[in-house]
Length: 201
Image 1 (cartoon, rainbow, N blue to C red):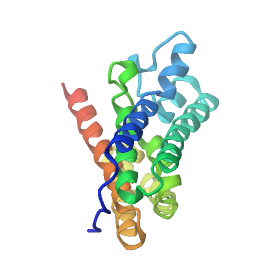
Image 2: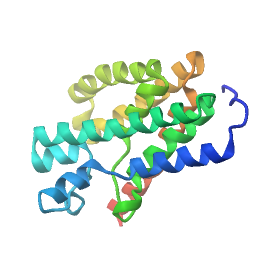
Image 3: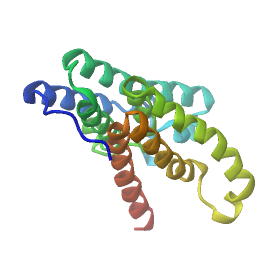
């Protein structure tokens, strides 16, 4: 497992981490659905997939782009304010923006699954790992749908995530970008377990 870099300046690190969490808390699906006079969380998760099911393709694209952009903005802000932060800062900020999306401070800590803001943060911090994730997903999703989904009866997104994240971690360990993906993936895993428990309750 790669070593983390040297310690970060505490005040600026705290600032960018909190800013990343608050950016993540601006959940596009909730904002969009409330603008339409509803709250998508009463019927579905507020990510791109849930928005597609509830409001259609155009709305889903808008929401997904919005959630990716907040990951991008959080990462760019961190790089601008703490340019020496390296992978340690990237891990903190990625985890924070995903946590904000999953547990938004502005919306009662009830958010989405975290995929889109994770992709946005990785796009800035470690595009090679992001490319590995996307290529893995491009192979796994159609293969899974054609072979296993009818028997496993699990949505393609969580199955693909379970396959793609280890591939991304391996690429990150070899080329850099291990820690940001681990941080974001860990938050997503906690959220997935929470959602599963809620469904069974």
